Image 1: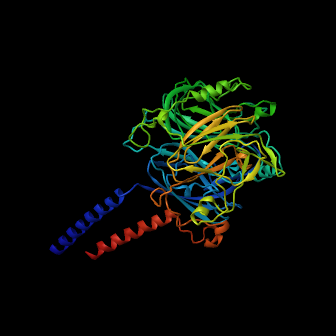
Image 2 (image 1 turned 45 degrees about the vertical axis):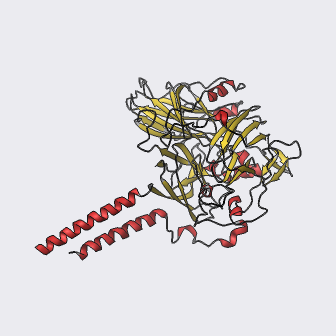
Image 3 (image 1 turned 120 degrees about the vertical axis):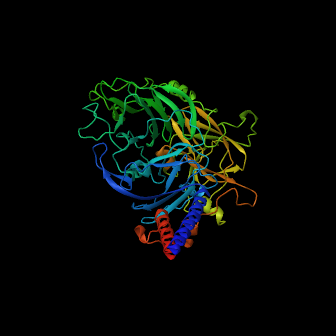
Length: 570
């Protein structure tokens, strides 16, 4: 008996030691989350016409990545498409880590049948974002999903916790496959009018029997009366600005792309391609019937655009009937952008709210910033260059090389690109080139987007923000170049991006240090001039060792070791 008691005491001591050790392990760093994704085609008919869409783990749209500030994210992506694949994390800051950006300038595409694991930290960031496939117009077929970064518990949120959190994807949609859309652009054709608007991958509620075919599956959002919900709305479409509104309900804007905003009510809001907004919507109506949720095309004219409307249903639990009657009216200003411009100007940063860190947002004293570089980026309508229909910035249509720019730098491969992107438009002949911007580390760059096209343009700087530019107007932004790497600057409109309206900003630390940038990943893919460095994979995940599988195996091994150690004392 004494021997048994001593054994049990020893076991208890060992368990206490191991518990303390495990606690130390858990508290030693920020948490890790693991995802395994199979990106594959599936058939769907959101507008009544069957087409090939891109799904993730059989889902269209893809799964939500729901994480918290400073968490480490590992996403193992298996490419089951019939063409190369890259996933980019729009708006999610890759601090010191452009290696994980998921665009052609920094990553070799994942070959057909191969897998690759993205590894990055959601460093000092909160807000609503989305991911999507970044090459070959693939986003026009799907492959997108939500990415939510929550505040850490010690960082307060500037509003009460809502009753529910709802992610809503809106976007124009073509019934043609993305490969057919590519062919049309390659042949010099414009894509024309989209076939409709999807909401969460579904077609419109049949608000009009003439416009909407029968048997279309629509999105329904179920809510409780009197409760407040957070709606995270993302425009994941091709190129159409959409006016978003919820019948009889106010939209209290609270956050956009990682920044809390001054809270103000809107009855409707224009959401441009690539933009993400968070609204608080209170269910304060009498539920005499369901209510329409609408996203309709803006700044367009012509009868064909009448079908470019997405309609979902807001259903109260005590609703007395189906929604009926006309949709709530959009702004009546087809030929006047003033309303939309004033609406955009009304959005203000909430500098008194804390972001990801316990200090107020907006800490720069902008009046005292020393601007080190100025670039005036002028776009024009697509034009013929060397017999091809191309889109340009400052007269240059970007050509993506086979060797990613960042890999070329890492392995000192010369001649892949030029650091000669012009600071302003030169009236000379336009050209196709791999020309990028040479940024000054820790400098401040002023970028002026000048839109000489006839439609609204939306631009994005990876790891930074989105910028909207109205026709015949300009938008000026200030960029702090404190993030070492090579960062994509592009039109978020998929057709303009595909036709070459992009460049990159290279930010190099002149000092010999590895503290300002992550090293090249040990699982890096190699292509182009570096293809001989690539080790072959077994196709379609044969022998696949995903991060989550390895984590599970590690946990099992640890558990077995504990059991074995305990048995030794008995």
